[in-house]
View 1 (tube, rainbow, N blue to C red):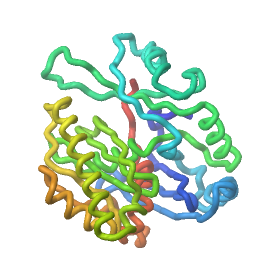
View 2 (cartoon, helix red, strand yellow; view 1 turned 90 degrees about the vertical axis):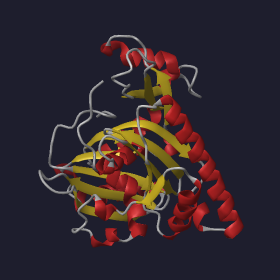
View 3 (cartoon, rainbow, N blue to C red; view 1 turned 180 degrees about the vertical axis):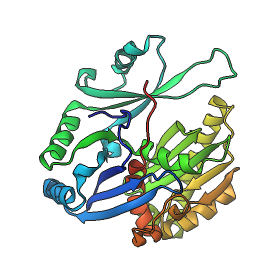
Length: 316
């Protein structure tokens, strides 16, 4: 079991994600032609203490043994850190990255499970600073999650993160030769990513939840919209300075339901790039799961579907 290991089968992925009220599951296949197809999706309601029995039921109901299986960590369960790429042979990369992380984690680096994501450089720029993303999570948490799935008889192949799940969806709608900014919100906060040629170049968390955006009066919502706008402006300006070779003409907002309409209009008025809303019907075949045609359902399953869209990863 790995974090970003290369896929070995083509039958499709079954992804699970743990949310405050239960467990989401989605199965996605990639036919040789046409859109990726959502074969199944479901939500099992239950508390944290019920996760083992919920997973056991999911394993049986969705025939988990037939698929490659992945699950998502929650934002609070890992850190995604930008680091300068060390000038070492590939076989020494993770050791070198671990050394660089020793003062960046709030726990001992020996207690961390670490993986690395490359951020490609401009091929026409010659020698240039090369960045990478390091993903770190506590060994104890990873071991507990593996045990949870083993006991439930779900053959867990990969543990993934929401940033990569969002990347998978963004990669389906990137304009040819250009980058794409994507913004999503959940009960755990917001996530901005910028992808280019299927690679993730920027991932930034926004400390505002979907519940906050859906509640409060007009003044409170406007204040939240202001905060989001400022964070986006700063992040996109920083990205433009760091990766000037990537043209990002559009921000695409993930499905949010009613809470998203006002925010999209506000961002469209106050940002210098085009702002559009994504409907997953544009990029996925949802015919087998009609409930996913509703934007509220698309919001709930967004990250789980992104994880199930997992394709082959480049080995570092």
